[in-house]
Length: 289
Image 1 (cartoon, rainbow, N blue to C red):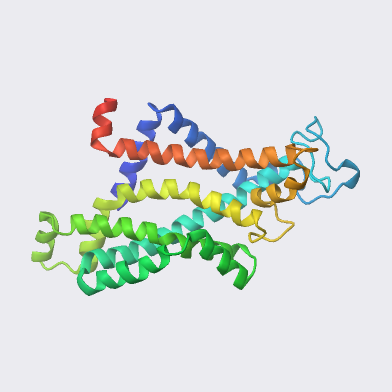
Image 2 (cartoon, one colour; image 1 turned 90 degrees about the vertical axis):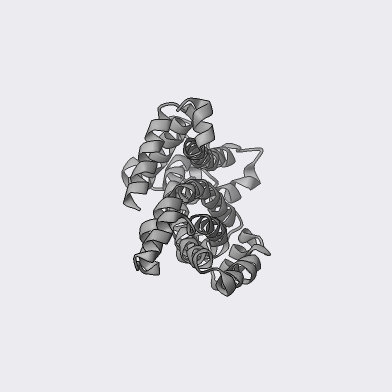
């Protein structure tokens, strides 16, 4: 597993030198990560500081991104919003991937009735409802909060990873090295963790990179609907919701958080597409890698 992750990391660095979009994506992800980790030191002002006399000011030297309807500095709120997006996105992908690896591996490895139960009944039951609809219903039932939001998005997003893992396990479990390990008396756990998972981790990593984009967009959607983190915590989606009433008289309220969401989603999509192209032998031959 560690060797496969190291290979994927080396591949991403190698491809980033040849792919301008991938390089831009990596730079943006690093930038948003720095914002998320060091927001208290980077943000020029307190994101929750209300200054009514300065409300709805356009971008200026005092407020580079302007102020919102309560006089709060938009640049500071955008920087702090990266914390929520990166935390929720990373947690959702990690949780969904964890569940997907477990259920997908069990379904693909054991097959038979176990596969039918997980694939036909459980996965199809979740796929029959849009993931965002499940998340909205879950948060509406349990209430707002970052933990409830992460849990809701994980419940709606694990099925895609499970189906991918199941398909990959089905393709690998009958290969010669797996049969040799089974003939030598290796346990199912050892076969899965030491022989199967390291050979299917590459497409899963690609799916996780693209899934980060979807998780960031889902968090922004939930916050826009008022089902994300409660105010006054800064979130890109809630900033879009607050600014839509001033779309024409103060468009900067919507422009900057929307640009942050767009750049975050694009960056993860660029990285995911670049990794997919690099790990596909046909694409590597065409690109001369």
